[in-house]
Amino acid sequence: MIVRKLKEIRQNGDKNIKSDGWESARLLLKDDGMGFSFHVTTLYTGAELHMHYQNHLESVLILKGKGTIEDLGTGETHELKPGVMYALNNHDKHIVRVENEILCACVFNPPVTGREVHDESGAYPADTSEEREPALSE
Image 1: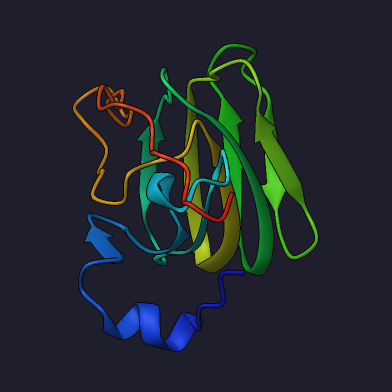
Image 2 (image 1 turned 30 degrees about the vertical axis):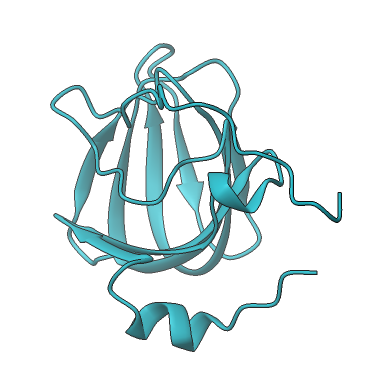
């Protein structure tokens, strides 16, 4: 069983990643062996985040705040507010615009290793390291 506290992750620089317009507490990572990673992310007011996860699928649940997500493939814009979930199931190129600071829970597949930040294309790089070895108890 894995038990972690968000407050402790936020205070631990290793698993709390900050970048332009966002901060992400990485609660589960590739090395945890769950097959996905789980993050609690804050998107800062006024941020306009151009993203294109070419190597990952992501689902996001908005917990607090307000903004929009624009699907650059279709031109559609959707409101982001508490209770809204979006899933980037087709490696969708998108822009998130933050009106009021957004707090969200995010799941990535394949799992991230923990240190990723967006590259120039808005993606996280592909993880080319070997798969995690199962624990002896597995």
